[in-house]
Image 1 (cartoon, rainbow, N blue to C red):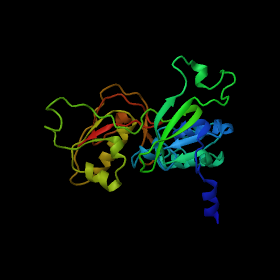
Image 2: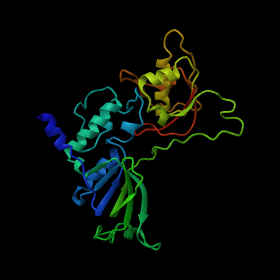
Image 3: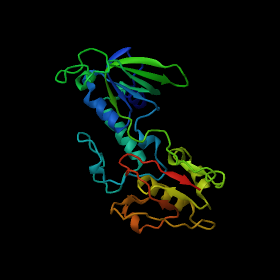
Length: 298
C-alpha cells in the first residue's frame, strides 16, 4: 500500500502538449529548482535519462563525496534531514536529497524522462531583442506567443518530435555527456602508447569490479587536479593496496589552494598532505559542487 502511494506521488508527465509555455532542459539541481520556481506555468522538464540528479547520478565514481558541509549545499527552502551530520554526503545521499526536494514540491508531474533534446530553434526574426526572447515586453513575459521549437527523441527512436514553447530554460550544466579527450600529435598517441586511455565520463559507468581490474597493478596517470581527479586517485590507491599493488606518486603542478576533500569516512583532509597511488598533472577544471570530468590513462 505504501509503495503504491509512493509510486503515485512520483508519477511523471505522460504526454507533452504540442504547445506549452515553458520548457526546462535538464533534471539536475538547476532543473528542479527552475521547475519549482516556474510551477505556475506548468513547465515541461525534459530529462534524457530515467532519473533526476544530473551529474550526481550519472557522472560520479563509487567513492565520490561532496567536499562541502551539508548546510552549505542545500536549497534555501529545503534543508537536509540530517543537517547536523558532520560527514560529507555521498553521491547517493545527494540524489536522495534531490528526490526528496522533488517530493516536497510535487515536481515529478512536470518531468518527462527519457526525453533527449537534440534541437532548439528560435522562431523569431534575426532582429529580435532580449525582450522578444521572453515572448513579451520584459515587464509582462509569456503572453501566449511561442518563440521556441524544441526537438525531442525518446527511447531508441531516431524520430525527432517538435514542441513549441514561449520560453526555454537551459539547465544542462557545463559538463554535459560528451568526453573531451586530448588530441595526440601524429605518431605519438596510440601508436606508441599501448595502455588504456579513458575519460572519467566512461570510467564512472564501470562497476566496482571493473574499476579495480582497470587500475590494479598498473601505473596510472590522472590528467586534472581538481575534485574528480582526486576521486580517481583515491580509487586507484584503494585498488592498489596490498601485495601486487603498483606504487605511484601524486604530483601537484601548482600551489595548494587550501581546500579539502573527504576521506572514505567522510572526514576532511587537505590534498596537499595526502599520498595517492596515481600521478596527476595540472589542467583546468572546477571543484565538485557539480562534477568535473578528468581523463585517466593506465
